[in-house]
Length: 242
Image (cartoon, rainbow, N blue to C red):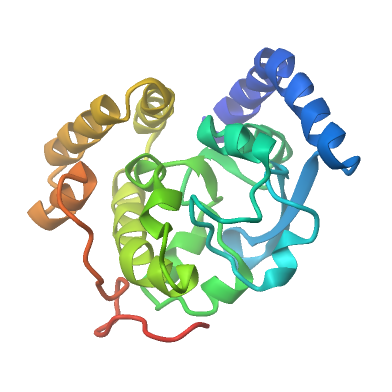
């Protein structure tokens, strides 16, 4: 059922989004006469690598800087890229990866190999399913760029402030995954574009109903400042890169 819904919804989504995506793709190409696509190597189910497609929001060869995490004020982001990121259009084209079977509509977000090498055994469970375009964590941390804005080392900040809670939210999703939860998360992802606060309230309500611990509910509400925490299955906070 999950795979069938992935195929049908991704195909429909690509057709519906085409009138928006095609003009944006042209604008991305027009600004520097390079491909509007960025092919991002990621680690998928079973720790197998795959090529994730994104609309390019950065300058050419931005990935050669060695920085994987992107702050909102990152100078590598182009003018068109700011718009693309604001409305998550860079991720809409990943519906093609869903259609192909590399990804699912809902599941833990895929990560780069340098990051997955750091995973604890508990986090490795996130690699037992197809990665997704969205999940609880994607909604809760849709402002990831703002969280990392102004940080001296965005990668370390990501591993201290975002990765731990993304991991716990991803593991919570795995415990409760199902077609109806997937449909709810897809709807909440769309809602988050119009009203992030309403989407966060709905996420907290859903997680509370499913018995989420208070600490995870506090993080999901995003009403308090994030504090460094160890990743799932670790005893200490990450202090070094890779």
